[in-house]
Amino acid sequence: MSEPGDTGALHSALGTELFVLQSAASSTISEAGTRSTIYLATLSGGLVALGFAGSSPSLLAVMTFTVLPTIFMLGWFTVVRLVDTSVESITARHRMARIRAYFASLHPLGPTLIAQDDPRTNGELGVRYARSSFLFTMASMVGAVNSVVGGALVTLVLTIGLGLRTLPATLFGIAAGLVLLLATLRYERRRIASVNSGATDASQSR
Image (cartoon, rainbow, N blue to C red):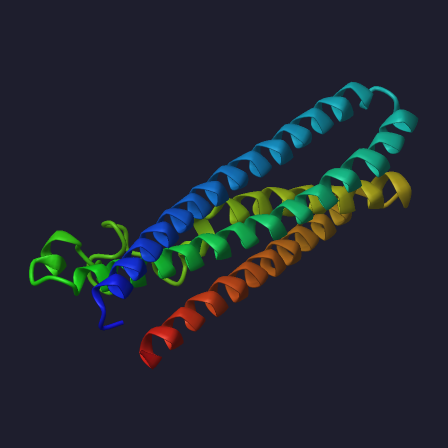
């Protein structure tokens, strides 16, 4: 590393790595938007189909027990993948921050020209992320909508399939939706907290 040729090769490799990480971060955002759009479009089409089937109780029952479970499972698959993209994006940002910190240390003007955000004061690019920030991600959005779908599915199963009265069936559906939402948020928070803690440990070890 003391030879100029080795240093130049390292800088070239780091520049390439920075470009690759930027591309990966951009692709995660694009994928998250696409998957969210697919889920919401499927949900919208399914609700329209249920609306047309509402005039026929037998047809409504068939649609309920086929369309809604399919949408609900699609929602779970979407949430899992959206959490994966969030983890990938966070990991890429941490790695890019380490490369930028190295470049900033190469020259006395580096820290001024290549600003390093302090998450505790200024946040990242002016945005401060708290422990509750995961509530506003695409995964949380889709998870909240899918929890409503799950609660509605439980209510319809109890009323149409088991003949339960509307009020208790609705209460059971609300309870099921809340449980699903809490489970989704807990899963997302655990995944994001694990990658953030891993990045913190790596930073402290250096």
